[in-house]
Length: 483
Image 1 (cartoon, helix red, strand yellow):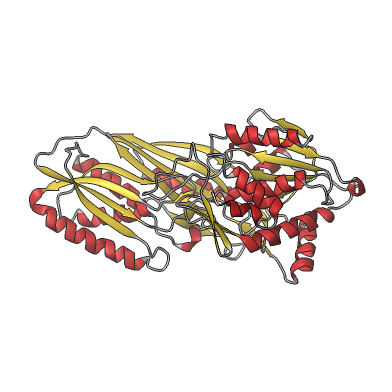
Image 2 (image 1 turned 90 degrees about the vertical axis):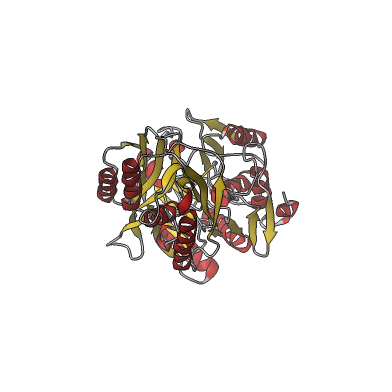
C-alpha cells in the first residue's frame, strides 16, 4: 500500500483508513476486523463491548464542557464489498487493499477501495482517539454485514444503546444530508436441469467485460449497462440465426453491485461457426454504441473451447433466456413525492448455471413497501416454475423533515460552506431504518464524504471532500443540543 496515504489531511481519518485497509473485511468474514476494533477501543481505555451478532460498541464520555448535551450514536459499518477486475489475481482473504493517490482521489489497484464505509469507520476512530475535539458523550456503533443483508443492524441488541441522536456516516456526496432511504429484499431463483448430449457440437466461450458497474442503489438511475442482460439479449438475437446450445453461464457478482462481466459457454454445429461469430460481433457493437457514454470500456472475447459439455435442451433454454429477458432490471418506478428519487428498482445481479444447477440473485429495493411487494410479485410471475426464496428483508427509513438534528446540520453546513446543503432521501439501503426499528425515538441523519464508483473497482474517495466532511463532523458535535 502507498504509505503516503498516512500523511494526508485530516491525518486522524487517513491513518486509520490505512490501518483498516490492511485487514480483510468482507461481509460475513469480519472476525479479524471485529477483533481489531475491540482491541482499538480497549487500548484507548474506553468501554468496549459487542452484542450477540458481533456489532462493536465503544463509548467515550463527554468532554468536560459538554456533559449537559444529548448522547450521540455515531455509526458506520465494518464490512466492505470485495469486487475486483476479471484479470486481477488479488487475494482479498489474505491481502490488504493496494491504495494509491491520483490527484484529489485515493484509489485502489484493480479492486474496490473500501471507502464505503471505511472512511466513516476511520472518522469515528479519529474522534475516539482525539484529545482536543469538543464532543458530547459518544456511543460509537460499528455494525457488521451491511453489504450482504444488513445482518448487524437487523440483529442489533435492543437495549445496548442509550443515545438520543444517530449520526450515520454512510452518505457518498459531501453536500448531501440524508433523511430517508429505501428498504430491500434479496431474491434467489433456483432450478435444476437434466443436461443433454448433442452430437457434433463445437464449443465457444463468450465473454463481455469492461462495463462500468457500480452501486445498485445509488447508481441504478444512471442507465448503466448490466452485463447479464446484454449477454442474454445477444443470445436471444443469435438464436434466430444459428442452432446454439447453452452449457454454462456465469455473470455478475454481489447483489448490490451492477454486473460488469458475464460469460457463457455455448455449443454450435461446426458449419455455423462463422455465422455465429460475425453476428455476435455485430450485435455486441450495437450495444457498445448504445452504452458508449455510460460504459465506454465495454469489450468482448470469443474463443473456442476444446472441451465437450452437456447442454440445456432447447425447450428449457428458451424458457430460461425468455425469463431473464423479462426480469425487471434497473429503475422500476420513480417517487411521486420526491423529485428525482427512485422509488423501486431491481438489480439482476448474478447468474450461474454450472452442471445443470441454476442460481439467479436479485436485489429489489423500494422506499414504499407496497411497491416492493409489487416488484416481488412481478419477478415471481416471470420465473413461474422456478424455486424462489426471499431473504434479508429490511425496512426503509421514512423521512422526517421536522427533525431537530436536521436543523442543526443545515445551520452548521451553511455556516461552514456559505451554501445550502442538498437534503435528500436516497435509494440505497442505509442502516438507519433498521436501527430506528430497534430504537424508534432516535433522531437520525446521514452524511459523509464524496465517494465515487462504490461497489466497483473504480471506487475512489475525494481527499478534499474528506477534509470538508471532517470539519463538518467536528462542528456538528460542538452543536449537539442540550439534554
